Image (cartoon, rainbow, N blue to C red; front, top):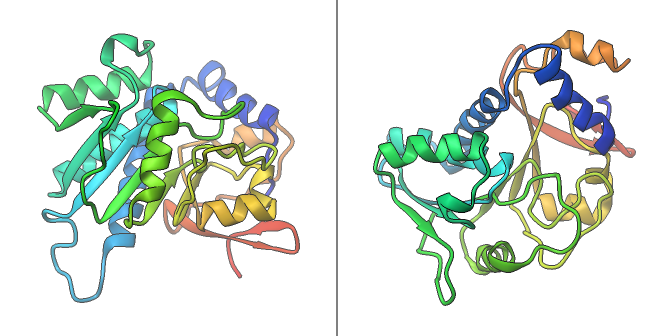
Length: 251
């Protein structure tokens, strides 16, 4: 059984990682992005395929926050592994704040990665998977503007949707579903799951749940008086289950 975090606890996890342990947001977005790419490869794989990702079309939708930075890191790894990746951002580079999102975008620009920005009348290209890294868990209120447009386009696609942190449009702290929100095929939560994901409507929006390592020190959880064993001793991404109103790593 795993602890389910409140929004205050999750903010404190990230604060302590930076202020006490010196683990910067760029590092956590990089780890999250790598694990997201690994999960995408796993979900796209079949027993018959040897080159799972070679020329497979994947669309990555990225917002302007840290979730978008994780999505861009995943896009870079998928590109390096041979996938055909189209990256669509909600904001132009000049509208991005300094931080992990801009840093990850800078790397992709130097790689001449295929970048596009959401525009009126734009449609998603055909894809075998859509990665939702638009908002993450820090949502307050209904998505709007280009973010809302991309959520609606993602839901209109026949491709499976893999959401990072939480489906965009879902408040992972409360479980509230805003309009519009992503209806994900799978969701990769980070570090520890948040309480709102236990709500039935939230669980339905998440699809299949996974939990991924982002490098949180075990001692940090002790700082928060949380009993958390070494979760990722055998794998960096684990299936996450819900039973009797609690999160479990094993059925």
